[in-house]
Amino acid sequence: MSCKADRRKCEGCVCEQFKMIDIGTVVQITLGDDEFFEDQDYTFLCLDPHDCCVTLIDTSDNNVFIVDCERIRGVKFINNTVLPPG
Image 1 (tube, rainbow, N blue to C red):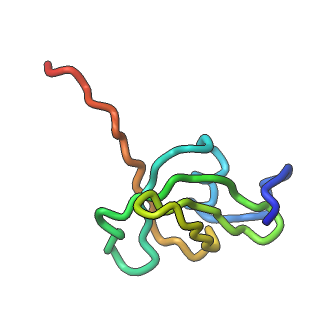
Image 2 (tube, rainbow, N blue to C red; image 1 turned 90 degrees about the vertical axis):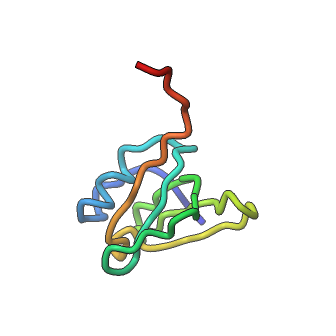
């Protein structure tokens, strides 16, 4: 698993998002129509620029999940920060 350097090869709006987010960002993804893997959070580790594989860590069991960013149909960014009321 390599996650280095030039990230220009991978195309599509989801790939573009993964090119810009920080390591450790928590996301949910959808591979199908409009159904996100609700209650399935993944921690972003890296985007491999050579094969467009996104490496994620399943937060429920710390297993590695690898998926082609060009096959992901949607990404939801999870904000786990509690904001003050008002």
